[in-house]
Length: 274
Length: 349
Image 1 (cartoon, chains in turn green, purple):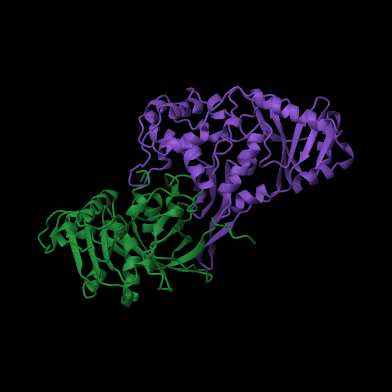
Image 2 (cartoon, chains in turn brown, purple; image 1 turned 45 degrees about the vertical axis):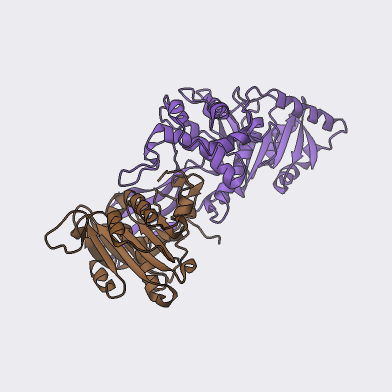
């Protein structure tokens, strides 16, 4: 029988973790396919998650493809489907179809120094690359992470970030000063200028809110990064995930199929429709 | 294969297609032409242009993708998800305009490729298109000849019929077409030698009758690449009511939505459905954050025109417009795609 691209596979949530609570709640899910269905994916690819009765939402896969036992998603509670996802607990079922999109070209980055720059929930798509780079540690040069959130409470993967500090420099920031905070205070793009990552043999990968990405790219350019050395992800409203429903395009590119990963050299040629 | 079919034999031929679903244009009570399933009644072939193109037969306005239900089993609820696929019997669309068949040929590209859309192809593979060359343009806004089509174009068609007074000249364009002829072999005759000449003349004549013209569509496609930020989109979209008619009634527009519809919330029971959607609605592209990459009418008119005349050309080297003129004729405020593109040609970057 011909495969049906719209039919999700059932997956069981095996673990959940509240990363951030309150108005901008973020929850991390680990899910395993039932019926031994599974798919191989690349860092930076996405999956269309279903909560039956509520609908579907496109979510980036934050686990490394080298980990075969589960898939991890970190989800900001923001719309109908993500709110329904937040109501789920271990043992509940979701639908998963995909993987979708191009993913990061990490094999092309062998031998390079990787600079990860994230803001807010934007750490989720980066996390897949960070984990993969650590698992393939000897293939890459230096690794470093610059990450920020609005407040200390909004920082995701808090425990993991503490562990990560033993493996690579991690530069955190929050937007406004808080009594207990000992690291940088200010926006992520400013922290990039402050920490001055070297463009020599480097690739900078940035994910976060559009306004952050815009200024991170500007500041990386000031630090003499070339357009080809800067990678980012774009998100747009999606329904099909396969370049047919017509809503996520920027110019002739469908973000779901031809993106979401773009080098700045590619993205700057496309109209600003994201 | 080429044949002729006497007009008086036409109803008999339709009758011979007994085991097929036969769709024909018919006038409804409000006087609108539409494709309906034939029930042995009259076939209205004098139709000029149906309001809805036959697209709806290949790509219905609403279709169920899957059914889901929570069922109590052994004290614990279990989720059941059942894929629903269309069960389509052999179907023939009689009376398609060549432009409408050409639109199906464009939709084949969209729904094909790396991710084949099984819902579309279940229908498409079973459906034959029998078209009539437009000896008279079916609409005052026809402009197929400007977008690489013609009133007798063959793309997407299985049979092309040309009216020769008391008979039709029948060109078979695919194995599906041959099957339709062989269903009533005795009714079809070998064409007389002079017929070919008559057909050629009729086709040439039909092209001359088309009143509207979009000059230089290919150069316009090139020009559009530099016009994303043009003030033209603001000016031309000012009167738009955001009704979406231009896209819903377009034979090549294919944008859709996927949603879950609930019949019962506890225990949960419902369906996932695909419905037509349109780039002309504000929430089409709106993120859940409230951010909207196409926030105004200007951005949405630009998307409609650029998708048809630039993006599709970049990807498939074809216009995603077949020149049927429906979006012009049926727009309640008179937005005219030809006039807008004329301005691109004359004043564009």
